[in-house]
Amino acid sequence: MVGPMAHSRARANPADGKPPVRRAASAASVLFLLVGVLGFVPGITSGTDDLRFAGHTSGAFLFGAFQVSVLHNLVHLLFGVVGLALARTVGGARTFLVGGGAVYLVLWLYGLAVDHDTGANVLPVNPADDWLHLGLGLGLIALGLLTARPRPARSG
Image (cartoon, rainbow, N blue to C red; front, side, top):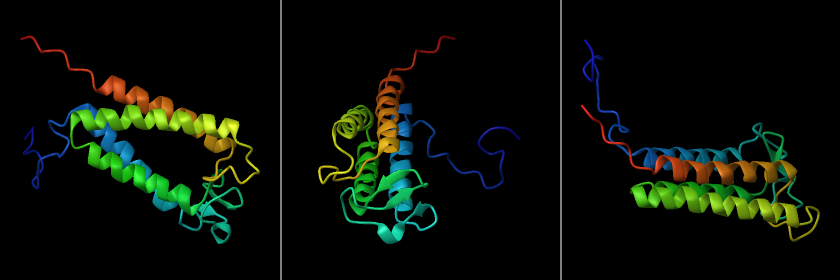
């Protein structure tokens, strides 16, 4: 048997008919939620005993590389929740991806400009975060622009 009834417990795929931009925004949002939660998990985040609410003195590192704080993790969680809410519409999904990408590019610039060893480094960020923010910014914007394009009409 082929098609939707090929499996005895076949059920509708929630992604069927969902525009690519909405799927991309939903997937990115879930990843941000996951990263926000993992920032609190000992073993995945090293130095959780040194996790601070905010600032450069937080000694916790997600995956041993990305400096995090409670505030940093909460920002990821909030970003994920906002993304899921906006992913409910095509316009909202595109806004989340492109706007969120712009926010991450600003965070990248912030990371380049701020002295990582001062109180101005509130989130906190380190060089690994800076590179990640650049990649996230460019990736989110690309997803927002490339997945929001209308599909060509099928001929046939």
